[in-house]
Length: 254
Length: 265
Image (cartoon, each protein chain N blue to C red):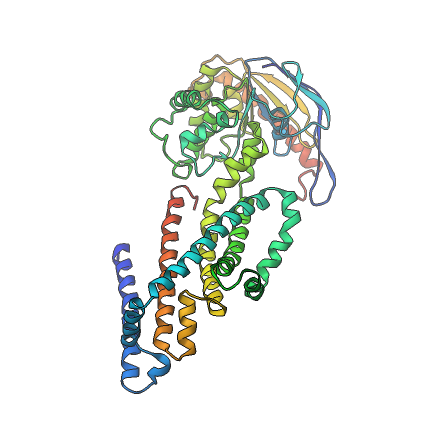
């Protein structure tokens, strides 16, 4: 079987699994075998989604996306810059690396109560939560990327009389680009966790806020709308990053 | 560019055991400007170390290396190195790789482009300007490596076993190419190799080195006429020089084995 056929077959298999799951989810509660009060069902979720989109869900999405985007941008700028610098300059690395490792190892959700006290329950605290989740994986992968610069390339640059800044710009930065994208892969997931946890804990609007409210009033259908939205959003972002990663395949050695 | 080594020594410290290792010991020689000189000797005889000193990448522990009468201090624009591994930037195309040295040395973009366009032709890479290194064979990669070094128009070209990783056929072909290119540039060249054949074919002068610590055993003049074609390798005069070199290197190698220098290698 050739590869095009097999990739089509793989896609069909995935769709079949999905359809079966959704079908069972619809049939089992309807047949009375399980209680839809806790499990909901696709048709109930559809109805809840229709109601939500007509009653302010767009605003929740807008708030969550704004918080996520701003937090991610901040994390990218800080993470990429710090990662490049800490990876390349040995002195900076010695000064800060232990703390980066320490921060990365701790459950940063534990910082959220402090952040909420400092920044309040508005957008700022959620932006900070996204940032905290996302910037460490970026720093760490970028640092790793800078250190993988081929020794032979450094020797070559030196033989042409390159100074440190030139080696940094012509060798360290380009060779860490694929690592930046790899870091973003992890960061997207962590950032989403940040925005949702932040909204669940204390907020005035947002997808997580809607879910917390619905859950507290036993409206499981609405909670599932939030879950599905986040799942689809995360999936789309990951696919986008895969597209960007393909750009590096042109030159990346196998 | 005239080269003169005066009692040049280089000591390394072994990373694992912290023991000192003499890579070069009191090496003296001189090379006239415009000559093609091959350095030959067994692995570990300090050929590459000598080249690195000339490139300014390794500082001598004692003695000095003079280029046109001035001691080497760090890398400089008057020299360029062709590495054993092609050391190409994988994210750059052939053309941009060839421009790398000029870019580092701050040439204006237009001038760099003009110089590199000419060199791409000279080294036989026409049509591959937009390819990435991973798309090229080992021989093609070494052409880019060479073009990058030639682009900076060095007065001294340093080549560190540039064909060591090529298969035999490609290696012979590239030797012919180096001869062809050198006919046009006539740069003073130091070429490290451990192939006797390669050294005799390319060199005006061959410096034979002994092993650990590296010393100069002898210098052989190669007075075969230029330009040389690969057929030259069938010439009796070629064989006479190659055979005498082989004898000297064999004797050297047996002495070394007798001293057990290779034990534990």
